[in-house]
Image 1 (cartoon, one colour):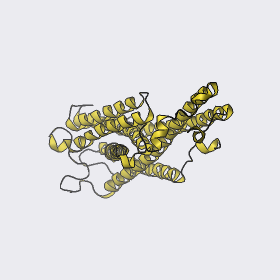
Image 2 (cartoon, each protein chain N blue to C red):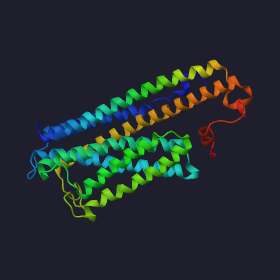
Image 3 (cartoon, one colour):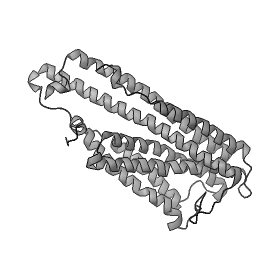
Image 4 (cartoon, rainbow over the protein chains, first blue to last red):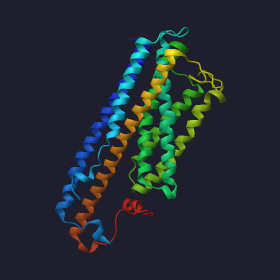
Length: 52
Length: 265
């Protein structure tokens, strides 16, 4: 492999892996947000507006 | 509030930017590797210069500019919003990736042209310092703290990172070391690249800029989601406390809430 091929491979592969990683992270956090919401609704705790 | 409404919508324009970035990058690679002729002096090694300067431009000016601008707007009381804090944090992380790639592709070009993988040249050293400062910023961001405190200290840290940007830019003029001057333009604005080589390099700048915008947008969404989950977890903890001791109701909200309302926590 030449230096040129290596340079293109490193740059494109890194950007691709980082981009896929970001999409996976976004999906995980979306799932976590949906999951973390349920306990609040179930506890019947006061909302922000009721507190003050 | 319904469960799905807390998840921020994905803007359509971001998908369009992502597709355009992908296509532009593909065309740049095609032109750079197969269509453009070898350089008279450097031969095929000049093909690395269709990606190295664009990567450096994104790392330095786009990421550095967004990080510095976002941090300044966060620190300015009239424009203070977590939007700017999250945008700056996203720019620093994406910028760190581009800084690392700038160093990697530069090193792969330097080995056959200069004869070394690395040298303590002013441009190289200041770019490596930029990457280290960005990693330091990301480490600082992971230190647990109230969201407003974290945002304030990260904004200051981002401005410290941004100080290195003009140093990298002017390093080739301030210190006469190994790295050449402007790749496309010299200080007199004389073009060094022409024809299909210029078009390929120009497309490279557009392609990586589009990729940067897409990565920044997705990274920003991750930041928003992280904060929302953190806020939700705090809500759960407080709800549990309130359910145990109803007299706690009315004590007050989190620092982040107070901050979002416009006041200091």
